[in-house]
Length: 323
Image 1 (cartoon, rainbow, N blue to C red):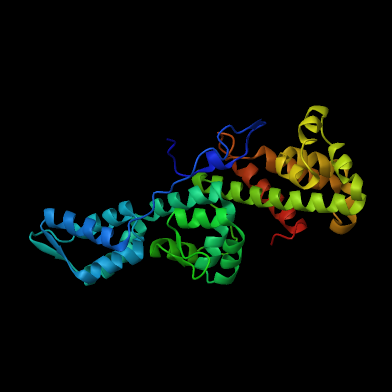
Image 2 (tube, one colour):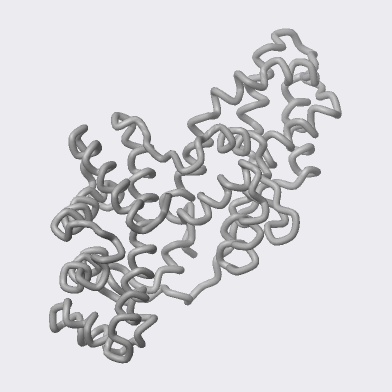
């Protein structure tokens, strides 16, 4: 049995330059949040041991706010219990409403940790959940219907219910946190390394996916049947031998970020008219983004690196129309 915070280890077909021996060899099983009866039973039993009675409506409020996440529910109840010093006592709806905002601030770090796992490993899922929190259910449903893996992730983590029909974010605390985030405003405080890792990972991954599509379609349009040979010309001989086993479309999923840069460098004339950008600048932006992979390298980025990195992100996002 393998246990972890995400199933990426059995979903990735490659690890670095090697085939992943665990790819598709096991079934991912998500430990889902508690349902309402289990959440109610947990809170009621523990409260009785502490000499506390719980108003029935409080169970509903807890489930709506924390979605059956056992750790968040218990942390919230512990904070409520501090405000009832005499026993026997009672947890009331009024007490919960008075303390709701304070509990939300206390649990903010836990919410960020939950979302950071999603943002780093599954940036598409994170972005679509954020859109859902901000009211765009149509785009979310379209994405969910088109991807079984996407649906498995967002429902498996217990973040979203009924993803393909009537999507709703399960945790009110997460919903309010995401709703406050500016749409696609991904610039975090450069001194907050945890948030910076998420920002760098998300923006780099979006650029990488868009660049794969852009190069694939551009070379195919420019060279037709010779597109694969033209693409391979930018790669070292040993990589050509590995990629030769794939078809043209599948080959693009196997390329590394620096290899995309090499292809862009060799075939820039194909794209220059559309972009109207200077080749040296674009290649420099790509190289800096690749060097500053804070999620892949155990290093802290300096303020100057972060500032220029954001310039590179912005320029590439504009070229690829990711705004």
